[in-house]
Every structure is written in structure tokens, then in C-alpha cells.
Image (cartoon, rainbow, N blue to C red; front, side):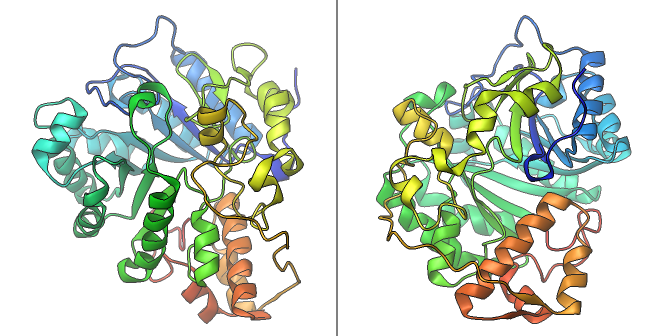
Length: 411
């Protein structure tokens, strides 16, 4: 039996868990190609055992998603088991099935937040895209219902050519809905999304630059780019907040588990590192060659390998694989030409007030990301001392109160 310990530098701190392939919608960009459940999905006992393995390995946050996770009859049992083991539980749903009783059950079993997908500000356009009648109204109702029951909500949007012109309105909509975070996902051509149109590198760059500037306007709501780790490079170049988020974590602090128990570095690649039913999750996370390779930045190739922002960003490994078949190739969505230099990594001092504020964040991997991000922000500004005031400026969510289970400054 493999010892249930992971090197602290490479713990599966965040796990995205596709509990089922069954779904009540038919979105054309679905990376899982969800619809019907697979012939063999992990049963309740296997899921509960996997929760224990995650906790023993140091997992701190788990995203229970699908397909549509609310279609699993044991979803609350799984969520409660994860919560009781000390994991922060977030549920990713299309929102169609979220009602008052459902929200009450989420709260009872320890769910902290709910991510709900909204891909258009226009109801008819969203419904046509998602393949469900009145899906938009159900999803918006879910946002309101979850907030009413004290759950924090995250608005999830996938940007494509089809809705590029709506992102500004969607951002304002998320704020109006009281969202904790607006997460903008940049399409990766995988699953059913292989037929969708990705943004060009130039349009991606322009949108990310705009998004970094929106952080200040939309505080304290978080504004996040997903599957576009160069967000951090752009924020650094502009001297803006946001360095505590982003960066590719595939295989280093993050992985996905499929309904069948396959472990992949990220939901947006089908490259399998192993299966939890064959020796356990610990064996896959600790020993799988694929994951070990992803932990070696020297494996990165092309512009990503030579980039001065390599440690800050790393490039999207899944997009590189989707377009080249090579997980370590340069990210084709990033037009940056490396300078050959390296970013300043000199030692910095923290004031007692700033350090105390950092230590109040209970989730270790978020605390580590925040620490490295604030230090990068300080170096970019030419500061040698990190004060509470500098943290306030560099942490996008710093102005919010003690919400989301009392977790300040979450990434």
C-alpha cells in the first residue's frame, strides 16, 4: 500500500471531480461530451473511499461537477463526506435543478460555494447554445436561490467567437447578481469543443489585457481568467493586481478525476495518468510518469520553456496538447516573445500586519499562491517591504468582508 503522503510542493490541493457524465443539457463546448452516464461510474462506496484518499494526500478543495452532479442521488452524501474531512466543497452545476430545497441540502452537507454557467446575457441565445428550454431563467434563478441561502456563487462563462461581444455585459451581470467571482474560461478544443472556434492569440491577448483592467472597477468581486495563465504575465507587465491567481497548476497542485476514476492533469485534456481503482489515488498522484514530468519546468519547450514568465505562468498545457499533441509545447494562444531574461526573485520583507493577514487564510495552496503573487507584485513595483496597504492594492478580493466561510482574500 502506498504511503498517503505527498511532497508539500506537489500536493493535489485542488481536485476537479467529474462525478457523472449524465447531463440534462447538451452544450457544444463540453469537454466531457456529457449526456448519458457511462457504463461504469464510481459507486458511492468508491467515491467515499476516494474522498478519504484525497484528504490524506492533502487535498484542500474539491469541485464536484459533471455532467450535472445533481443528477447523482448520492451527491449530498459525497459532499458531506468531503466537508467532514475538512475539504472546501464547491459544486459546479448548470443550475437548472437548483431549487430552495436543493440549496438547503447543499448548505446542510457543507457546500461552500456554487459555480453556475452563464454563457450569454440573452436568454434565447443562452438556451439555444446550451440546448435546454428556459435554461437561462433556471440558471439565473439558481444564482438568486443560492445567494438567498448564504452560498457564495461563481458565474462561469466560456468565451468563444460566438459570445466575445457579450463579455462586458456578462461581467456587469455577475456583479449585479452578487457573485463572489466571475470566471472567464478560454475555450480549449477538446471533447465536443473540438468543433468550436477558439479566439486567435491576438484577440485572446486583447481580451486578457482588458480583463486585467476590470479588476479594479469590479472589486471586491474577483475577475478571473481560466485556461489562460498568461493573465498573470499581462497583469505583471501592467503593474496590476491579479498575480495571486492563474498560472497553470496541471499535475502540480491540480488534477481531474473522471466518472470512471481516471486521473488527468486537468479537465481539458484526456491524457490519463492512471486510474484510482488500480492501486488508489495516492499511487497515481505520487508515481504517474505523466504527472512527474509536468512538475519539471525544464520539460517546457518553445517560447514557454524560454520565457521569463515561465514560473509565473507556465502556459496552458492542455491547449498546447490540443493543438500539437504535445503537453510540453508552447502555448499557441500566447503571442509573447521571450526576452531571455529572468524576473527578479530577490528576498522581500513582510510587515507583521501583512504576515498576520496572510496567515489568516486557512487554505494552504491559496495562501502560497497569494504569497508568491503579492511578492511578484511588490517586486514589479520596486518595493522591498510588503505592508498591509500593499496587500490591499495587490489582492483583488481584499476589500470584501469575511464571507465564503470566513476566508479572506481568496484566489
